[in-house]
Image 1 (cartoon, helix red, strand yellow):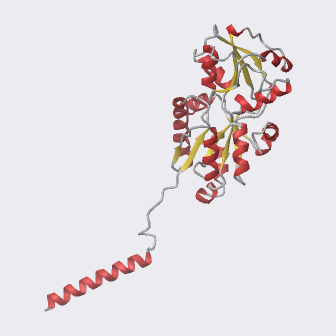
Image 2: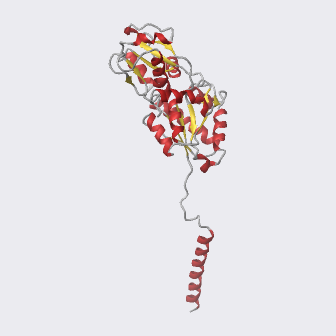
Length: 305
């Protein structure tokens, strides 16, 4: 009988301890959710090159910020803006136009950093050497492109569409009727170089930084394609931060990320590689106001409403 009473007492005691445990630790039964800082980028180059770059950057940010960091690729420029808008991406490497489009849809979003080259960015107009198009000396001479086939990059690219279209309009070149056939959209700068080199289009326009990188890599055949005009300068690429990160990582998180990007050091081999892949010597601070002209041009040509 004593054994039975003792067993019953022990059972009731364990139940009581279990009840006390669940009462004093209400969060113990709740699933633990991992806070991940998710980055993305407009797909302006070959996907393999982007994966290599942003995988290395994610590892650097994770080590410096002490939070999990993940890079999530997107299919096109519009998808990058949408993912930022709905909160699937916390920070995105946008071009000038897509950065403005994203910020206008997410109140409180901030442009926090750009490369040293992005305040003085240029587009390059290129032509197949068999097209007969001669180098252009100034903007008004863009009229020499009339009657030739022509391709932009992505429809939402700042350096591959927005600013080039603006310069063409200033020169009096209309997209409808002035080119041979419809103006093309190649989806990215690498594709534009390939299409013009192959003669699929007589001419096209690309991001200067991508052209210079591919030239350095020996991937451009200058016997087939050449630069015919360098555009005036404009603001372009930049990192944009979603304000929702403040709720998950703290009010100072955008400033912490900005400082981490500024800290990239070309004297540290791994960090030097990241900067080289970005085509930059360093990152510098930026702000929303720097892209006011991009917004004005975007509205003027109907890319921002």
